Amino acid sequence: MSLISEGADFRGPLTARLAEPSLASVGDYIALMKPRVMSLVVFTALVGLAVAPGSLHPLIGFTALLCIAVGAGAAGALNMWYDADIDAIMTRTQRRPVPMGRIQPGEALAFGLTLASFAVVVLGLLVNVLASALLAFTIFFYVVIYTVWLKRSTPQNIVIGGAAGAFPPMIGWAAATGSLSLEPVLLFMIIFFWTPPHFWALALTRTEDYARAGIPMLPVVAGDVTTRRHILLHTLILVPLGIAPWALGYAGALYGLIAVGSGAIMLVLGWQVFRERRPTERASKQLFAFSILYLFLLFAVLLIERGWGGLIARLAV
Amino acid sequence: MIVGVAMNEQPKDEGIVLTEAQKRARRSRSIAIALSLAALVILFYLVTLAKGPIVLVRPL
Figure 1 (tube, chains in turn cyan, blue):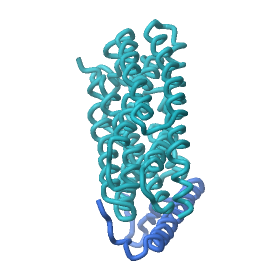
Figure 2 (tube, chains in turn cyan, red):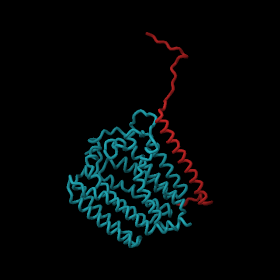
Figure 3 (cartoon, helix red, strand yellow):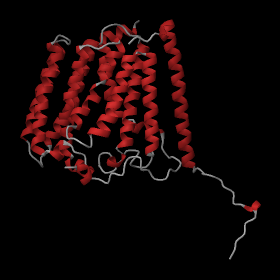
Figure 4 (tube, chains in turn orange, yellow):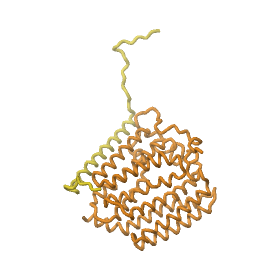
């Protein structure tokens, strides 16, 4: 079954009206970079950078975070370029600059490619090549693998595509050390398994919107009950992963306490979502909101316990 | 009816004329690009100072 053909009128993102002189403001270009997503990317990258062993000059650390932020913004702009047609259909996204006509698709494409090139090259020149290569792969993964390929073709889109959002702590770690180890991979796994319950909880409340745009999100393709089962299953994997940094000795008692406590709340909410049936959406909305707090808490405590001392020491260099 | 236009009477092509709003938007974009490039220059300069002679050494 092709949901794409049954859904929206997909004319292709490059189909643009005759170009007029742009009215786009600086704010429109900032919106094109998805600043809220960018802030989460910078935060998780900062944690990866701060918990990494060894010393790093604060200016190099700042440069790494700047490049990661710009790279995330570039990926966001390229996503909005390609998805302009479906963004125009969905209520949540139709006020974005490209569907609103304030930025032409070609301008968004040029902006994204320019930023991506700058971010990758500057990170490679000023920090190290491994971090630069990881950033390049992350942008490629988000734009080509997720946006162009998976998003419109499979209900597993956000499961696999979630890897793009999970890479930043690894890039931060690589920027600080020039290498990788188990600990940044663990941080990757936490975000990777956090993404599906988070987005499926949102998708449950916007099923009609996704269906209208022809995006084969799990609730659209497999239905309400299957999605709720998958949310619970992924939450059951996520919570032990969240506790793992403490269990493996990478984090202290405070982290362990927060991971167990907030993990228990995630499990309760996951169970409530599993038991809930449409049209009730209360548990789904609660899980969506709490999942943001859950991820923030885990990384913030890790930053305080492991990274804060290290950051202060690095600033004192 | 034949309308003849003399060679020296061709309508003047003024190209695209920007409105005031478009001019303001272009100016703000130009300033943002200039500031970004200036920041990049300063960043490269400071990193060169911070790294010293090893600035060209980029280990994997």
